[in-house]
Image (cartoon, rainbow, N blue to C red):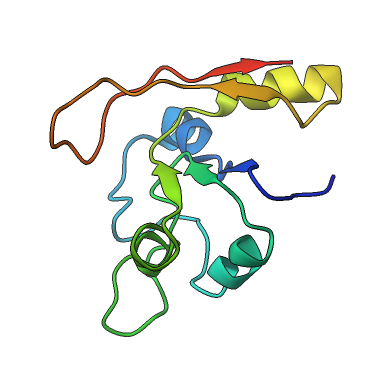
Length: 126
């Protein structure tokens, strides 16, 4: 698969499957995710949006003094939007069943005046 300009990249860490198996834990202190160095790779490909089943950042972040460097780099420095805390388990199963990892994504935010975020119901169309 090739990632290019305008693509949305989803990172499935298995958070929700692990939670179902082992129970809840403090994901702000310990979770899989992207290291800050991943931002360069995403920027080189000019992705439009990044989504994850957690907060996108690995925790602990491994960047001294910065709790969520991916958030800061993507949102502030690069202007790249983020989907946080997605449940990607059903999407992963659907993609694996079809052996297709590319799909059309539709997601419309609520029109919240002066808002910086919104609940979404993203839909993957294979």
